[in-house]
Every structure is written in structure tokens, then in C-alpha cells.
Image (cartoon, rainbow, N blue to C red; front, side, top):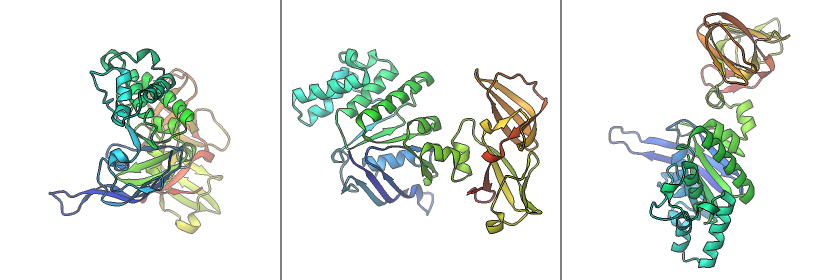
Length: 369
């Protein structure tokens, strides 16, 4: 296996309609450790798939450097980079059996038949495909086809595995099952894996580290817990989490040595320490963020009250998602119970002050509290 080092990577396209080039990836620098499972996540058009294709050699680099192991691969052909890629569509040969699909790449590389049998057998056992080796792709379910595509990559034993949204075509239950299988597979083979997805749940459950991208720019790179609990900016805070973080726009005041945050929906005092003395002036606009699970209908000492009108109640089984209109803002509370609320009723929830996050209203950058 090998580490992957990306230094000041740029990819732009010259548009016939604009004098300025259109950037898909901006000045990206990133290091993927040997054996790490790294997930690139972000909305459509953020540059994550383009980055993966640049690593694979399927797109030409505009500027910057990519190293796989100790080799700079900018000018190296894809077939010579010692990588294996699993795509969103399974790309299986319909006239070949599962065994033949998995063995085909090894046959092209002139591996001996005993070695091909050994590698295919090992991968099939790992992925639970032993009973399916004689079937054609049309005789398989979507999840089975995706496992064959993964197996075809495994038998190559490459330095780096690249996954481009491989689970997008599967239903919700199958996606959960395949996520667990990919996590188990990584634990078994300890390979370097780079995985692209727009699904933040996949990113949180699979990645040793998550790279959040937006419009070609890297927003944050950290382990899942850090990205979720300490987002670098408002975009990351809103993108990671389902339902996403609640935001309230207001102002910060320093009254008699106490820091206050005020908006139309929430007032919090004491315990909320915002460094306005060094970077902000009293009265400056700021955004407060609070995750749905940190709101409660129970009255708790020191928690900040938020009052709103019930717009929607989603009963999820073990929990209830309560959607409120709070003045000009909307918020969602994740309540750990089956609760009934009347639409249009006024409800007061309380926010855990210790879990509040503050963001600069102008730049979106997080302010340490």
C-alpha cells in the first residue's frame, strides 16, 4: 500500500463564454496516510469526483503535484499508477460470469492461472461471493453486483483503492449493508482507500478522516467526531448532520462583563463565552448554531429557551423530529421519544448552552467559544 500526497492541485476549464477559467478544484493540498480510509464529501459540483479522477489519471492536472508512494504521477498513465477504481455504475461485462469479471484484469496482466484462482477465491470468500462465481451479472441483485465490482478491484492488490459514489444506485437498506461490508473490508486488508460521496452519513460511518469540499475549495479535513462537533465554518456545520444544525442570526453584547447573544428567537446569557474583546465589537452580527439533539422540551437549569410554532412533526419510531417556526427562523428539535404535538401550537424548547457554536455572520467562519 502507499500514501497519497496532493500539493497545490488545481483543475480548471477554459470556457468559450468567459474570459476567466472555470475552476473545479482550487489549490488543494492533502495527505492520505498509508492504510487510511479518507472520504471526500460535499454537494454536487464541489470538486470531489474531479479530485478522484485527477488521482486516477482520468483527468489532466492544470497545476500542482500528485504523489502515490514516492512517485510523482502527474504524467503517468492510469494503467501504470497501480490504483483500482470502483465506479457508481458497476461496469461489469454482461457476457462474463462473476469469476470471469473478477479475473479479467489479471488475465490481461498475464498472471498464472493458479495465482488468478487464488486471488479470485480469496476475494470471493471475503465478500461472500463464493456461491455466485458461475452466475452472470443479470442474475445478481444490485448489492451483489457492487460486491463483484469491489472484488474485481481487490484481486488487483493495488497501492490505492478509489471509490466514486459506489453505493448511490442501491436502496437505503442495501446501502447500510454495503457500508458495513466496506468498513469490514478496510479493517481486513488495511488498504489505502479514497472514497467520494455526497452522503454525509456514509462519510461519518466509513471515514477515518473526512474532507469536506465546497465549490472546489477544501473546507475542513479532520476525523468524523471533530468535523461534527467542531465544524470549521457554517457550511460544514450545516452540511454534516441530518437534520442539519439550526442557525439563529443575532447580535453579541457585552453587558457588565457578561456575554449575551440575542436574536428574535433565543437569548442566552452567562456560560456562553465569545471572544468579542479580541475580534468583535459589541453589537456585531453573529450566527448561533445548535444541533437538533441539543434541544429539549424539558426545562433544565441554565439552558436557553427557544419559542416557536409547530410546523411539522415527524415520528421516526424511537425519536420525534419537531419542526418549529421561531420568528423569521426555522429550527428542528430531535426528541428521544414518541411525542404528539398539535400543528400550529406554540412550544418552548431549551438549548444546551455548552453545545452552542458561534459563526461570523459575514464570513461564516466559526468563532471559538
